[in-house]
Image 1: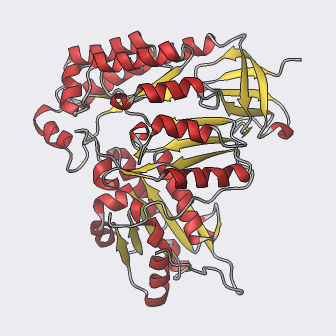
Image 2: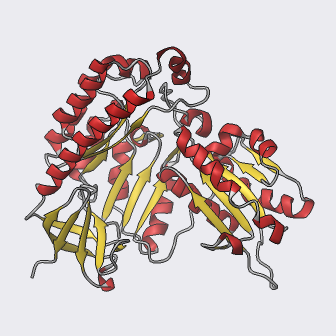
Image 3: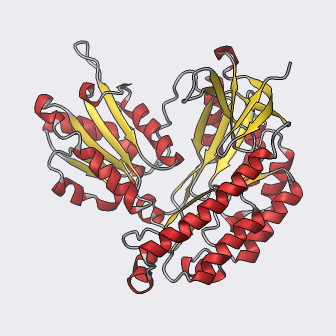
Length: 445
């Protein structure tokens, strides 16, 4: 049961400094943390009563970055003895008690599924001055706390799934987020309707393998149709998809529901059957290409992005060349590629003890792959020149306040000059320029 906590007093308003690392799921969880505590956010940690770092453990670099960031805040306790510092997220789940032992200034450790218990944890720390840890997966209502929604935002995430059952050899998600838990249809609809009532016009459904979602008689394709019918929705996205879970019901819904964007993020991880088998990805290169072809047959203009791991233990020159040839065959619109990073307790960590790839070789392979991807991303962007895109304006560009920005239906960033009165509206923009990572356009006269 969620315990209500009054963190504000007539004497002093309380502030939360929240730092987030990682994927969309972590961004969503940070909004849930904010909503659970029901206090105001501050951008200055010196003004905070609570500092929480929400962490990512997908790669070693990510978790080390989160750990070092916490160290930057320990000195604040000398000037503010009542300051409560906590670590949340996947690193918290992974290392648990070790964090409390290594960091005497850390007040609590909170796993992703324990967010509903956060108000009670804070209350107990404030009343008894004890350090707390909650990394249990035994939480009855995983989705009990909805995320905080900032007024004026026109896009929002809705989580439909927690955890994963896939057991990929490189991946730590099942360890830090547990097995797959699918959210009931009615709860997903309820949260979406609430967000739409607050002015949101674009929803992104998120899950570790989002298209494996199911509830009672419903499957993911049914969910796309039901959400697509909700009043006020202009755009519907989802991430991240698993290749073996691409079904006809899903593809038909993507084709027929006009609100569904023409983009799918479909991680392949390797173009080599040998490496895919070592990774325990449960599909072959041929299966993946068949999924791509089925999507393109139904939606010819669909944009496809992917993830690629370079230097997985046992990867040969030939295996790597097959990853490059897959990129050339599919012509991915974009990709997230990175060198393999062993994660504690995974099968990949064991494989790395005997079959690890020299870091220099992995780096060289990664550079080759990324240069090839840059070519195809620019090629795809240049192909959009002269086309008119119907877009949902999200806000002003971070780099130039004279420009508005949004993601096209193909998930490309498009900037154009315009006024703030267009934010949240659907407008037609003609693409005038294709850049390495974005597009620029104008509103036709």
